[in-house]
Image 1 (cartoon, helix red, strand yellow):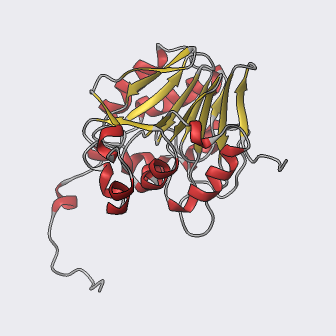
Image 2 (cartoon, one colour; image 1 turned 90 degrees about the vertical axis):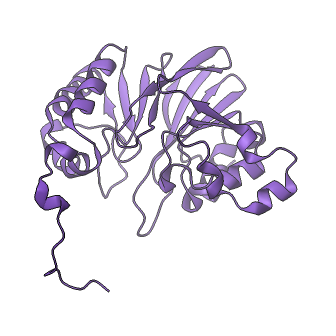
Image 3 (cartoon, helix red, strand yellow; image 1 turned 30 degrees about the horizontal axis):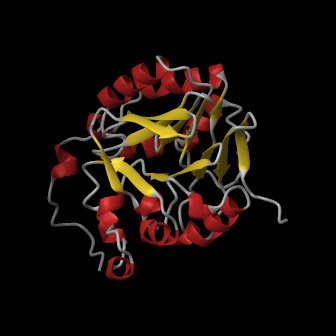
Length: 270
């Protein structure tokens, strides 16, 4: 048996959560993928694109048969989130859960060949979430799709697992780092330099960040695990991030008329 590259986030013998953080190599942005197992039921979160598909499938097989995969949950529509959807739908029986705003866009990631060889069309295996989110039955327990709209996608959901007390937060809390250390943020003040630029550009405005932080503060969260970079583990680290993001000016807060102007003196780019 080959050793799994999965990082165990939680395991009580029945309910298990795993992260995969070093499957992307080369020029592409680092991305984390996640697997939740409850008994013999499994859900894959933000599986990524073609760059991760083969490696991720191999790693998951070491933990649970992919032909029994129940759900693929996509926080939003970006390529590093769900571009491999066609291949997963071809090789597994999983249903895809995403915002209703993106359910008609996802088939664009699948080739027409998919519909030619499958009796069930891709669109019929996509479950669209209304803006308020909802509960997802996985084995003996429930996962919760919680709203994170405009952070950064117009239709954006995160997954809260009340058993492990983990919030799988998508791009919220993401950090752009070069190493694959997944032990958790140790020095929060130092870590902000790996987050600030990303959040200022990708998150829509401070109002959305504050509303999101208020929501998360009401949940019982031991760990926030983003799709890029390091997780926040423990009460202190989680609280530090919520305090920081709730005060951060970002997106439209920082834009002026200059950012919406046409300048004829710009240097040629092509």
